[in-house]
Image 1 (cartoon, rainbow, N blue to C red):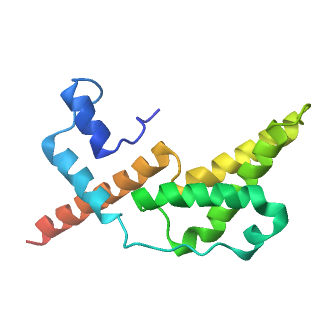
Image 2: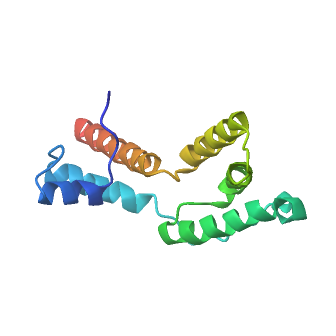
Length: 151
């Protein structure tokens, strides 16, 4: 099974504590460069209309929390709005079902899986964000190799 992707901060932390896989300085620098390249200009997300309805009040609350936290790490763009709204809806359904006196285990499982699936696609999990950075770093490596071959 492959090792989970790690951010440059985690790699540096592990290197300082002499734990985990050993990465060279160039590998860490490439990972840091890739992390810098996925940062975007400030984006103001538009809330989808269906979240503004009274029946989706819990999902709207989750939307606002995630947008606030996502702004700090510049994770979302306007193209992500619909997917994020669906994640918020499933998360609200999951939380609503979980607080019932006798929750339906099948619904809990279904809502939880859907929310986790959307979270993974949106980069809301640590592994998903690190995987994004690894892809960028690998793309930089491929570009560097192609440039050196052409020279």
